[in-house]
Length: 294
Image (cartoon, rainbow, N blue to C red; front, top):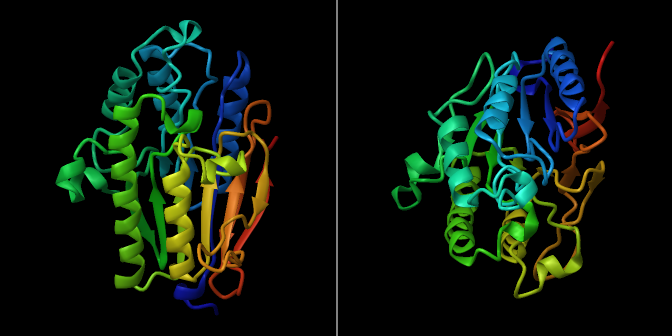
């Protein structure tokens, strides 16, 4: 018999949906399929709509209701389409900061995840008084795996709105510093970090002074090199399934062979990814596409 501490578990990652008229039915079918599969939890990595569709209260509330139809815990980290891009006329010409405030009030009203059987989350807002508005940044433990969400989004992380970007970037970097400290103090075996932005869309994102992702990439490279245990960074944004190892040691420039990146599909592909974590294996993360089941 396999001891409890060594048993594998499964979770689901998905994002960038539903984007079009008619996609909501398929999204509901995907949720139903996930419920039948009974994973430990699911993580939605942002973009609950496309960048040009209305950012209305009614739509955001509808997605919130759908998230709460997940039988297992559903943890959500916001994407750019549901707030930074809402200034577009086609999206309703909203003030992005107002949309972010509404999202925080709606999706992050307490310390629990979404879903019918929520779990308790440890939120940056409750740990760092300096960053009390960042209710969306959270961590939680499942056995010896540390899960983390951090609010890094596409559209260059809203760098053009420099005041907002600077504040959130400071909070995000402080949060990542904090959770990597936890990996040492609590003897974490595996680390999973979920965010929305595609950190590797262009090499310039890691070097350009006008990149809103440069600081995040630099800190992740440094901390993942120090962690030196299996880690998985999950994101969406670019709508194509990718599993690779793009992180590198900032000094030696060698690939970090224990750090993985999963980019989920989305947009026209109303599909998810099932991740299995098996601590008995040298490479504990395994992946398979999760499709709507008949």
